[in-house]
Image (cartoon, rainbow, N blue to C red; front, side, top):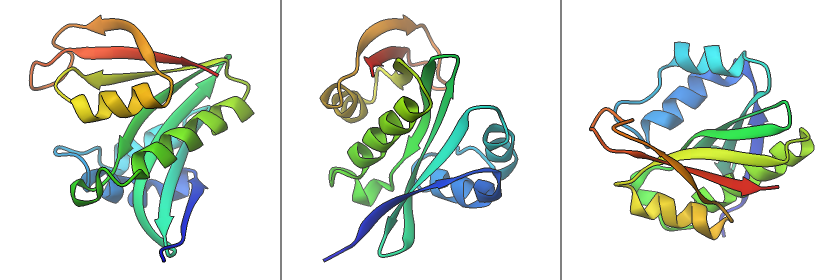
Length: 146
């Protein structure tokens, strides 16, 4: 049976975070972007490990009583196994520890599986950003009380 754990990483993990992001997105955020984010105030990287091997990632920011799930990436061939939920729940817990009262996120209105995941984790609709993504899709803004 696989052993799963979640590890927090900072700026030293920028290359790993970029590599994991690329497993879930095209185009992905590169190492320089990850380094810039991870070096920012209140930003924390979360890496999901399976048998000590990095598998998936999330990036959160918690500052001034609020938090944001900046991104989450699970390899396509591992989606639907609960890995994303583990990362979202770990992100919510990290935001609570940082003193945040709520978490926000944005998800493409064309990404029904991700939207369903976020709803299962307690997120509700809070707004919409028209044509937010490169493909022209709208971003659904969602929030979750912590």
